[in-house]
Image 1 (cartoon, rainbow, N blue to C red):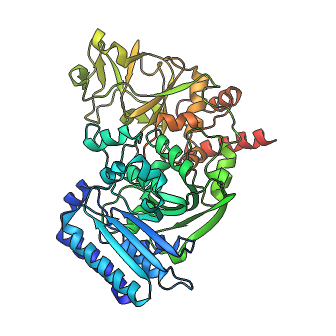
Image 2: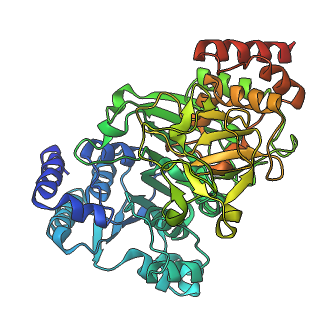
Image 3: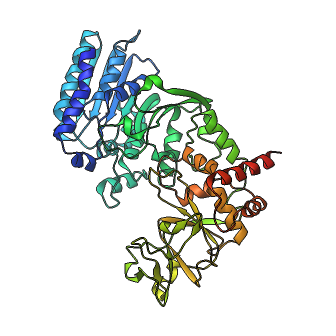
Amino acid sequence: MTIEIINTFDEIRKSYNGSSCRTERSKIGQFLTPLNIARYMASLFRHERDHVRLLDAGAGTGVLFATYIETLVTIKKPPTSIYVVAYENDQRILPYLEETMKRCELVCKSAGIEFRGEIRVEDFITAALSLSEENLFYKQDEKFTHGILNPPYKKINGRSLTRRLLNKAGIEVSNLYAAFVWLSARLIVSGGELVAITPRSFCNGPYFRRFRTELLKMMRLHHIHIFDSRKKAFADDDVLQENVIYYMVKEERRPERLIISSSEGSDFDKSINRLVLYDTVVSPKDRDAFIHLVLSEADNHIMNKVETFATSLSELGIDVSTGRVVDFRAQRYLRLIPEKEAVPLIYPCHFISGFVSWPSDSVKKPNAIVALPQTKELLLPSGYYVLTKRFTTKEERRRVVAAIFDPKRVRSTFVGFENHMNYFHIGGKGLSPKLAKGLALYLNSSIVDRYFRLFSGHTQVNATDLRRMPYPSIKQLFRLGTYVKHQMPDQATVDEILEKECAAHDE
């Protein structure tokens, strides 16, 4: 395929984006792949085959399979035949896709390669699930040697037909992109390859646990590429998620190492590549199959530092839960100003200098919740609790932000914690004062924040993520707690204190 023809893809993409409604594209989770990203994805395939059967699920304009064909026709030993199956059910984009398929056929013909292209105008999930068990698992001519995809990013409605069909097939996912990748992986032959670009959110957290475990059973990671800037990779679209590109091979053997690369945007010539041990990215001991993206020696240093603290939260006798009060469900019981029969209701906006400052008259959030039999299950006995924000903005300096609820500062028999926070507790009750202070100081350290970012590609801090982290021992937490007086020390002091504790632990 000539450079001139390939280069028109970005013009086509921009033209389509300009002529179509961004809201409508977002509704179906459609983000078209820029040409340079498509070329990079195509370059990740490694194995030469005489006969290529290529799957592109959610093909859009066809830029992904076209760039791979561009690569195939120029290699030293091109294949003798190429068969492309492209799934796309957006009628508005079909003319572009049909034109791409025609161009690919002409290019292959001029290179002496047998070509067959098929556009399936149907929903990929329904089509993939409709394949019989016999065809799906035993007939090799129904499977593919290669898969390349930029699947739609959209949450699956819990009551939708799609969700019911997926559940029936044992595919438990909450987002279309995970369903597309899962089903594509099932359709790849043994020894086959898959390249995908998706949000990074699947790498950790409870919602994608089943997806991760099943995908990593079927396929082995060989290369992961991370974009340091979420804005620059998809500059023409409002892409809020951090995206990753990953290359996988369907094989039994776990590779000893894999490549993790990164670039600020889509300037791949300036990528930084790092060869890392597979087990440091996907630990065989990890039942949750978290994917740790360690980019540099500095990242590795952070992981080693934090993991010198080898105590689990359960070993400390501490648990962490999500705040019980969902304000819109309990709206009739909420009060802007504290009144008789009401108890404090704590929001993240009450976090001041590492402690809860209550009440607040500077915000429009309620300050109290009425204590009634109907709200009993939403409240906790007053005590020392450590709270963390569940959501932070991209602009916030830290992702893990902790504060101490001190019952001597906020006097009440009971307290309510709003759902946008997590709270650390012992059996539904508070911690000792010194333990709470030490835990909050640890969580507010830069080293913990950077550690958390290594395995979290989103701004949400889930209770599950916090349970998985390593913690100092009880003795160490008590020692850290002695440094916290009337307010949390400043960031530099917190980091210095924890660095000393790390050094003392190493000795």
